[in-house]
Image 1 (cartoon, rainbow, N blue to C red):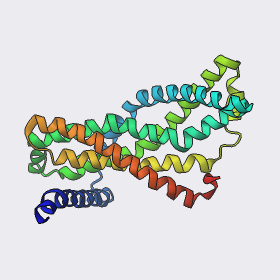
Image 2: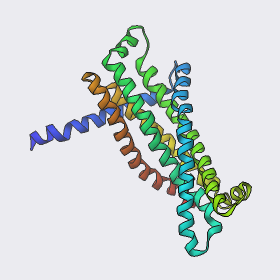
Image 3: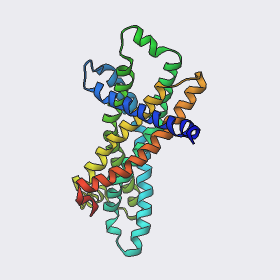
Image 4: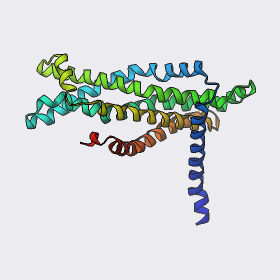
Amino acid sequence: MADFLHRYVLPPLATAGDAVVFSVRAVREAFRPPFELKETARQLYEIGWLSVPLIAAAGFAVGIVLSMHTRASLERFGAEALIPAALTLALVRETGPLVVGLLVSGRVGAGVGAELGAMKVTEQVDALEAVAVDSFKFLVVTRMVACVVAMPILTTVMNFTGIVGGWVAEAAITGMAFRTYFEAAFSIVQFTDYLPGTLKTMVFGFIIAMTASYIGMHTSHGTQGVGRSATRSVVLASMLMIAANVVLVRLIFFVFPETAE
């Protein structure tokens, strides 16, 4: 029994505790100077701006698919007029934030894990420390801040392009004008529907950045380790994000009870 605990139970618990300490340190360092604004801006460009085409294309496609499925369901009850509002509500509450989180986890999580892993195994991290640069703040904190800031913006892009995609699908069938569709889409959607789902993506961004950074900064075994770090970053970040989403949805219902109605 003792051998089982030492081999299979204690190592994962030790890793989880180390990751929590790593994350707490990143949050603390984010509020301490120097703030590495130039590197943070560069990471915002890499993480946020370069992700916009992917998010916009995915949002447009998701909007079209959701519109077709929503129409197929509401036509049975003669409620076709609710299609724009139902699609928008589904997008801003859950579909948009979760899809953005998974897409960013795949694109950014793998990139950060591989990049930091490569720097670790080639001793570039040690080289930064040798020239008096705080490698943790420069490499980890900047990516965390950029990811947390970029996620709500990318979610807004996803929601907008999803609504446009829904309108394209609806216009192809009924010829509905965009203004009419837009007004119908926001006839029952309130700001309290948009705000919680968008803000929770900041937590998703934190999870993605911390998971990828932690795995990347603890990479070993050369180039094979870099590949494993990229894969583990995506898988673990996605799993943690989905688990966190369950908790966040329940918390949103508690803080914003009107969203549960």
